[in-house]
Length: 333
Image (cartoon, rainbow, N blue to C red; front, top):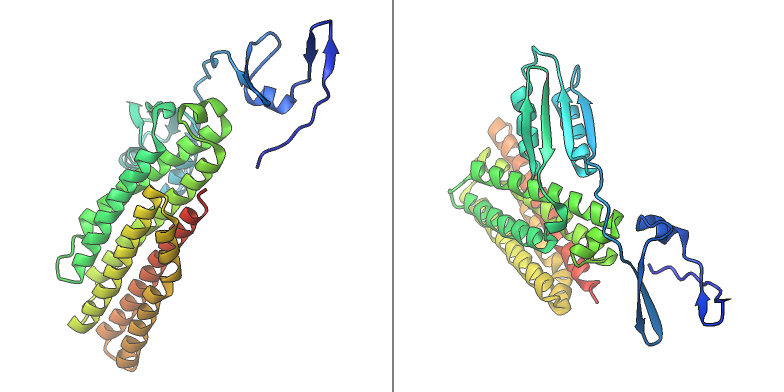
């Protein structure tokens, strides 16, 4: 939202007029008394720009004490520090810890974060990526390509060609891109110069965030679907029905991403209004399978029933995120 701040024009000498500058804008751009500001005359408007070179920011550094913490809590702290823009993360632990290799695995899943030093009591990880040179559009396109491939491989599982390990690795790649984009977008929102270097603006950053979050969720759903399919033993009829539904959802994903790249609202509208046509068959499959197997005392059948329910749940969630992507495109001007 644009804030309109009305200021009074004051006469200064014989040939000039002055207005006071909003303090918030001065602080946001790290300006001080004596700094130069460029003024562009655009007829009805005057455009003011902070003109000085950005001062080099001190690298942010944080110490994380790993002693007595679970691996999950430690992972959350490391990821949080990365997303909050810390350039150096020092992880401190006891010399007899057995978690060092797992800590290194956590840092490897964060793009640009490299292990620069390791001793018996600490690991030093440093960010080597200049976020001002990262293209958010390229990140989204890369996430899309990986997610599309994951969806195609997930569908192959219905046809007896399950590649869970490959899909799991691709999900890790999507997560790396998600974390990187989050770090870039947060810094761009806080620093106008970074946003300018990325040739973007607040509304576009907000929109990109929504797209990135939904792509990550869709990729994660494909991983979960594959995991449940690999651990179950469904009859051919059920597999064929699930295959058809998943294929339809995949086609709607391709459509919505086409709408995103071309900003075609009509395609987005169509994806949105036909969402129920893709989710209703999911409910029918689950109802049918439950009716056939709910009274079975066979443990295998009960396990398969749970797996079908989980697959259906993730298919519907995938369709919902695709619909949300369509609604994001529909908001474009």
